[in-house]
Every structure is written in structure tokens, then in C-alpha cells.
Image (cartoon, rainbow, N blue to C red; front, side, top):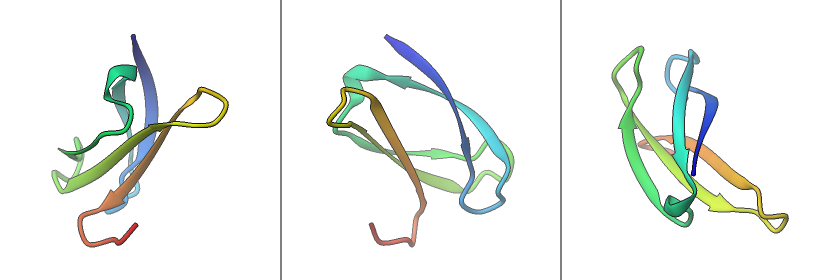
Length: 63
């Protein structure tokens, strides 16, 4: 099941639309920003309530 979500680029701050696949929960992956083309690290997980949780970071940010 795909879910559309709006996130903000950690570099340029612009909103971008991303599609999330529940099957990717627990994964970390990198996609380039659609606006500034810099690499964004996406971390997808499932919260205690069963909701998909997405966090985005720049490539140098420790998390």
C-alpha cells in the first residue's frame, strides 16, 4: 500500500511529495531532492500505534 506524504527538504526547505510503501518500514534509503537535487536520507518505520513514521535528514546529520 502506497501513501503520499509531504516532507520538507533539510537543505533548501522546499516541500516535496514522496510516496511511501508500508513494506519499506524499517528501511533507510536516499533520494535526491526534486528541487535542489541534494541527497536526502529517509528513514521509514512503524510507530507503536501502527502509523508509518518518516524522518528526513541531510547526509551529514547524525541520527
